[in-house]
Image 1 (cartoon, rainbow, N blue to C red):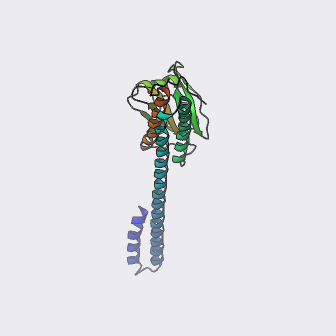
Image 2 (image 1 turned 90 degrees about the vertical axis):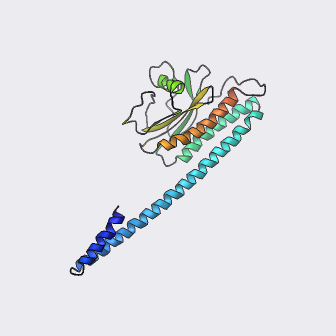
Image 3 (image 1 turned 120 degrees about the horizontal axis):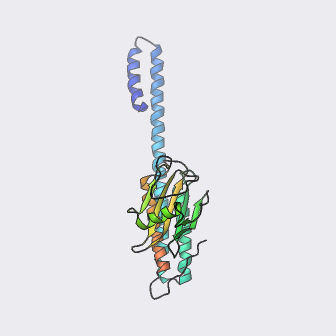
Length: 244
């Protein structure tokens, strides 16, 4: 706004400067300030555009590489599919940290639902902070609420912009070290396989649009989980997942 106001103010001062010479230098100073603001704003917009382009290209690369790996799974053996699933989960959380590198202390966690469907175990994670631990059903707290979110939430994701202003009723994370988070259900058409989360230390570092980015990674992981747990072509289903 100052970049628009300053030229107008300088024009008025230049008019007055015909009678008051001292106002001439004030007007010059205001014009120089206006120029500096415009140059700074232009440079900042170019920087943002460049950063967005880099992030977009990186995201496309990550998604393409994961999709390519998933496409190989139907022809793999049981152990190979399990290995691919592990690597895809590791790649997904690392990719999210790279995509959201501007977010302070960003952390991504892939949780896998146990065969008994009563626990969400940490499958893979990336970031500076270690996960609090598993979500366990029947704990009357975070575990029960997380599993309820997976089973019955009408939305595939949950986004909380600021934990200090909004405490989600259907989810009970620990909130240790972060103020904003996105949780996305990892699910295929007929089955829930786990949950993918992204959190950051500062409110405002994540947005509603970011939830759709996390959702893309979760959808690819859902295909990989489904292919691993219920493979086709007459092969025996994988009975367990290597958690760590």
